[in-house]
Amino acid sequence: MRATLRRLGDVIPLPVSVRPDPAANFLVSPTVSVSTDPAAADIADQLAELLRQATGHPVPVTGTGGSVEIVLGGYDKSEAYRIDIAAGGVTLRAGGNEGLFAAVQTLRQLLPVAEADEVTLPGGTIEDEPRFAYRGTMLDLARHFFTPDEIKSYVDLIVQFKINHLHLHLTDDQGWRLEIPGWPRLTEVGGGAGTGVGGVGGGFLTAAEYTDLVAYAGQRFVTIVPEIDLPGHVNAAQVAYPELTCDGEPVSPRTDAEVGYSSLCANRDETYAFVEDVIRTVAALTPGPFLHIGGDEAFSTPPEDYRRFLARVLPMPGKYGKRTVGWHEMAAVDLPPGAVAQYWRIEPADDGVARAADRGHQVIMSPADRSYLDMKYDKDSPLGLDWAGVVGVQRSYDWDPADRLPGVGEESLLGVEAPLWSETLRSPADIQFLAFPRLCAIAEIGWTPRAARNWPSFRERLATFGPRWTAQGINFHRSAEVDWLD
Image (cartoon, rainbow, N blue to C red; front, top):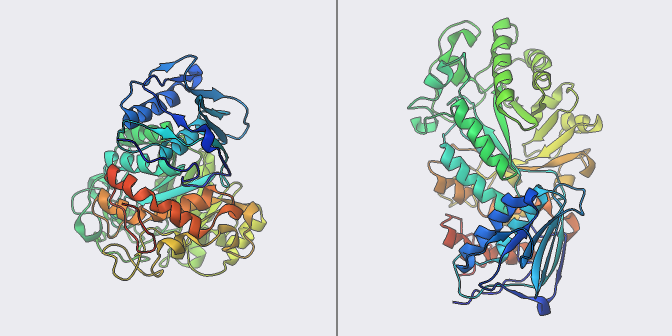
């Protein structure tokens, strides 16, 4: 079987520069090999395996002389890369392994998913680098837990589209999903059977499992961003430890999806001892630069208590070597140096975020009416919520983060993130259904130059992924907005 020749630019995200040369198509012959600098051996092994899967050829990795060559050097930016495809061979070039990994993800999309007798790569040159350093998605483990292997599978999917941050929502009213030594009941009770929305989806990550997961993601150049949501969304912690309530009285477990009813007490030293223990532990387990402290929907925390709490807690991640990230409500107070506000609401303006940006703080843009993957695609979607409206594929794509909030321009943006809350999720197939294809839209917004993006081009390129995702067994949503190829 001869594989269909893809066009050089039929990839997502769209690269900065695509210069096709049909006269330079490369036939992947049975003698194909990959040569590399020893410092990029892991990348070479990954590329060789993709070529084996596509062609059935042995594809050895050698030091020199390969028809597919991996070259280190020539670029200062960590994710910048170049791919040259000519009749005589293919060259992938970047300044480091992160850029080479990005190049491999692009080349991967030009290969057939299933093994073919004859595979040809389209000739030409791609030069590329990202618009934003932070391109993320969030997975909510608190309202429904997913196992380490299930999370790893999601990592393997998101890296194909150059998503490089995975934000894990680890604690909430319905469950506590990360082991904290010294506080065993957090997971014994908060991660036990019957936790989660609807009483299903219990479980937690041990410290060892979390460490392994962080390492797995790191090998794929994905930074894990852990979130411990405070001072609200803490019912699971208070069920486990009633001394964390204001009156010391027990509270009942909650498996509904309501928000805003729980709060830590801002005027008790026990609160801050607990919070610092947790932050110290999570920081020690997390090599990445970010630690997310939540801060959203603290409706039962009096405003003065909220400010008092944040004044003591926001500097804590910095004390342990991390940059504080929080939902944008925290921008109502003065933020410590390096803190990042994550905007998630649907309103057209936010004074706190604009003030933070004016003071030099970076912003992650995640407006719910554009980027929340847990919103329904349309009124008939079997999964998802609709409090922010229905969010189809074009709505996910046709916006720009630099235009979203007055006072928060391109220079203030760290990047974009597509959160996926898990109230309606029960399986990895559910994750895939809500994430794909909309996560691809957010990935392109985060990577591709603004001037190069347009919906007709994205829609056409997206359609070519239908057969690819079917072959990969991905339970994607066949949106009626896209003329999917069979």
